[in-house]
Length: 543
Image (spheres, rainbow, N blue to C red):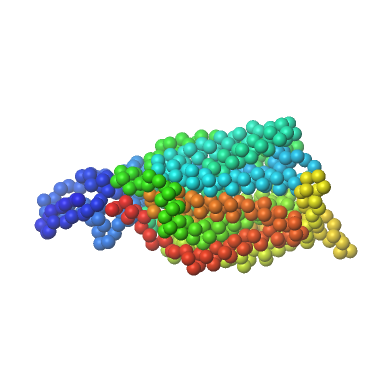
């Protein structure tokens, strides 16, 4: 108990964390200059105001100095964001470079002879990385709540980086047979486990450094990393393709984007090693309030488990399918269904992402003013209402009049082959040719609209998840619904979408799945999701 005497009555402040009871204790962001002592006790009163909150203010408001002027920890919030965002962007780059090269690598790691079978098998391998993400979330989330946020995401970055580098060294199916796809699947499992732990660590690390009133804005920079990682992967591929012939890229050039990632990983590891632990986690550890059984505390207590389930079905499931529809499925749809040249499709998506990325911070900042829930629900509802007309417009913009897809089952493999079909002058269905002159402006605009939906659902999600769970099990609790929503509901979308089109012949059939999931999230979230943007998480460590 802290006691101060002035000319007035004795003032007691009980139950402050141990670190704050010290004579020279500082809040995150408090300047280190020691004010001169005054005999009338006003200096003591000012220190009490700093600790207890003057006029009802709390520790969260003291955190503002961390963002504005640095802190006693020796670095500003922008360095915290840089260390977290760069590493997370590299992990997303590593993960998505695999998906961006789907049409090329499918024929490298699986038997040739049925391109659709190879693509579906490759996408299934891609999906494996998503399916294991929840297990990575549990494993590394537990470490993050036991040992520390920083330690957990140092390990995840190392695993992801070296796994991606290894893909660049893998032999093809033609030279190594089934050893190649088996090793590829094993590497994808490692990547999925690592990504399952990375995002939660980076989001919590930033969220626990920033003031409560600006959490949506600051954490939105972490949200940009997923889209930025995809954007960088597309740019690296385009530059690599432009620097060599198609034959050279098919032969060895595809390895370059995987191999150069090791340089980026090394830089990010260096930056992260210089950082210190989250101040809120340090306070929890020092005061003996950190969880010793994060998995049990997070998932066996109904109050917390209920919040996990609501967060999954009322937020992250819909957010996941909207994210992957607006970026990944749009790319696969143009390349595979509309027969737009792969390089052209990559340029379309890259431009739309570049135009859309600033809106993550706009939406994040807006969520600090009007709340997280309204924006996320708006994104889900808009997706349900407009996906069909948007993708119909994309078909018209492609200009090759794809009206259906024809499927045939391979007698040997049982796989469904897929051929986009159009009509000739007599109205007869014939195989569609590659889109000769697609309307690029229209395609960029249509994908950009979908990216705005992504910003609405994804921009505020980190701030919401951080505020929805207590600090002692925050890493574990938020990582699971996030990675089930994104890794399972979202990650399976390309595979389900393409398989649906192949099975039904309807070029829009792949949209029904994300529309249903987004619709469920809108209903559940509208009724059960609570608004969190007024919550003061810094108060948790103030006693």
